Amino acid sequence: MKPEVLLETHLPGLELYARGKVRDIYRLDDRLLIVATDRISAFDYILGSGIPRKGEVLTQLSLFWLDFLKGVVPTHLVTADVDEYPAPLRAYKDQLERRSMLVRRARMLEVECVARGYLAGSGWKDYKATGAICGIRLPPGLEESAELPEPIFTPATKAHTGHDTNITFEEAAALIGRHVAERVRELTLEIYRRAAGYARRRGIIIADTKFEFGFADGELILADEVLTPDSSRFWPAAGYRPGGPQPSFDKQYVRDYLESIRWNKQPPAPSLPEEVVRNTSAKYLEAYRLLTGKCL
View 1: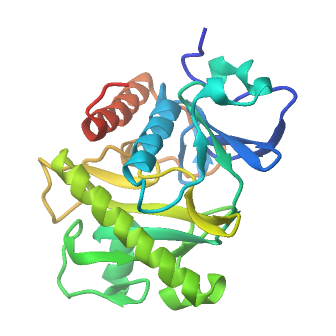
View 2: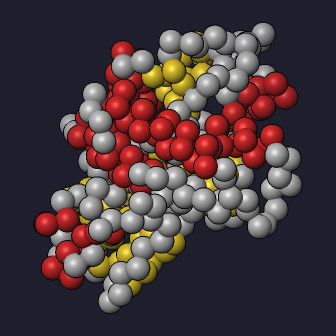
């Protein structure tokens, strides 16, 4: 019987490569097994409560987008069908089904590739302070949550602890090389435009999102999760009104709760009330339904 909430995988005999805030990653020669658990993090800490079916939503939505983007960019996906996994993995089907992917190992770029179509989050803070985001000047007088004149590429450095740091394109080029930086900027904006246009027709505004790219067998590929509520800011299109924060399908609901209880953002991280857990799960599932037209 599948656990209602999977907070941590246990796959004896396999090499645990990494355990992140949400994903458990196992190494299998030249491939990786990525398992999305139901853990949830906020303000850089894993909370004491899991969110039912969250790992399924993250995986299945990533798979939906990877299929949607076929022909645009190569990806890391090998298969997400547990029956096609190597034999030793099939014994753990109860932990892996619908929440795991077998992928190619890649040499990941040390830059997060962020696309922004709206003024929110750290972009809004930067704009208020400097009139720019990552060195890109924007028109004066924009409101919070305003749609930008056109989507922009705003890279960030990956933080192993703490927050990612926004950087300029020139700083990204210095880290990964100008040719690669130009290519991932092009891909990031192309993927964002395609996905945002599709999502808007389905009732969701993708305000911003981040992608990760790497090299596998000399080929630049899209890796990790893609266009999920954890890696993106999803807003309901119906109630969109610039001038302040927007309701969302992402973790902002949980962050707002934690702010309301005045958590000092230091360990130990609190558990969430049952109502917040239930509502958060419903938000993830509703985002999946709206975007795919299917219930999970």
